[in-house]
Amino acid sequence: MSEDRKVKSAVIRAGASVLWENPPAHYSAFSKMLVRPENANTNKLDFRISSYQPMGYVEPHTHKIQEQIYHIQEGEGVMEIDGERHVVRAQDTVHIPPGIEHAIYNSGLVDLVFYVITSPPEDE
Image (cartoon, rainbow, N blue to C red; front, side, top):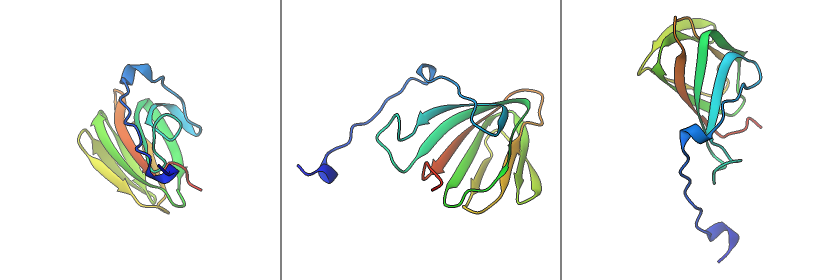
């Protein structure tokens, strides 16, 4: 069977088996990299859960080719999109196309917990 026709294996990962990381330019903010090219058979997706402590945030930034979906699970915060601030709460979903400056801040009193899906995984 040629390389491009091989069946890729599925991955089941216990969330507790993945350690929290503090990505660059994230402050009081931690993520579990649940599905990435390094730990799953994907080259198209980055799927993570993030937890920002009160006052935690990621600096405003822009992706060249990546698009992202944020889905808020717990807490509340502020999503900044091209300089405009919007309150986000549990069950809110935000889509960020490539080229849009954005940031997220935990402005609440408890941890802000959300999922992020990014495609492609790298912005190159």
